[in-house]
Image 1: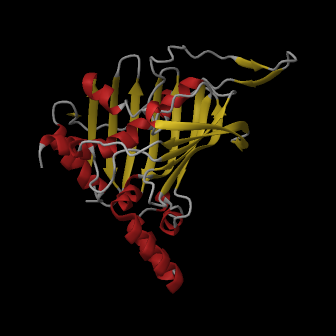
Image 2: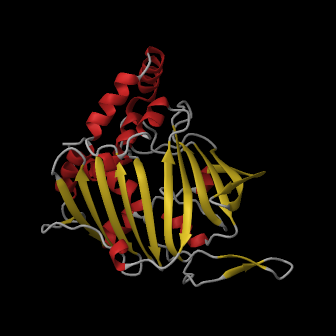
Image 3: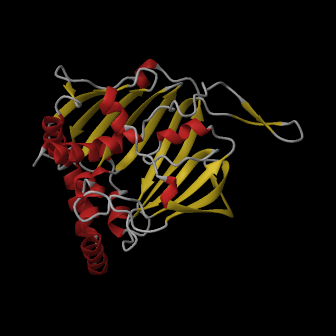
Length: 318
């Protein structure tokens, strides 16, 4: 593998971690303050979220395999044993459904290894820390947008294999630039609404106008187009726009995004639903913002190939 491919393989995991913890971008440049929304009648509604804890739900609607993985509890340990016990309880019908879905999803099945089962985000001004567990690894990440620096800690769920990675400068920019190219999408503003963590949200639908050619060298997974086909976006005027930079995919909306339903491929039923399951506005402690660190810290910008191989080993539970 050349260094470009290794960079992308590493970014596949790193972007999953980093994108969920991007601090408010300079694009908004709105220093978050405790601002209360005021209705037309002058009555105060909810206080704008500026600091606190956000619990995040990441699921795969319509996927039997994804629903199975959601039953895993990392706190109980030995994830492999939990998976074995659950598979033994599956009916012949469910096993057949999972096998069919797995074959249809193809390379997208790798996403199951990376999607967090449980995730908590700590936000304090222009800094954010995420702590979560995926099927095969535990991850922690801290990002400081003012300093344009970040650090990731990842550990295998099945071994002592772990790594701490620092990123800054160009590597910080690359890993924090997962932005939807709006000119390639048609946008429909619907009248549909939904409550997300108690906040009233309205729905917009982004659909790819036509296939976009992406150089193979820039596609992390063979067999995928490198673009997102469709995104359902739920926004709330009661949430700050700057939180949109905390999501796995940046969509330029005027209101705060609280839920995303992402369909990567037109011909695939595989979807990822990313939503705020709970929003707790409160002071965040230094302990909550801190992440684990090893004595040896790798620089992603200087050692993308080495970091990529180590990350892949952790992704696959080695």
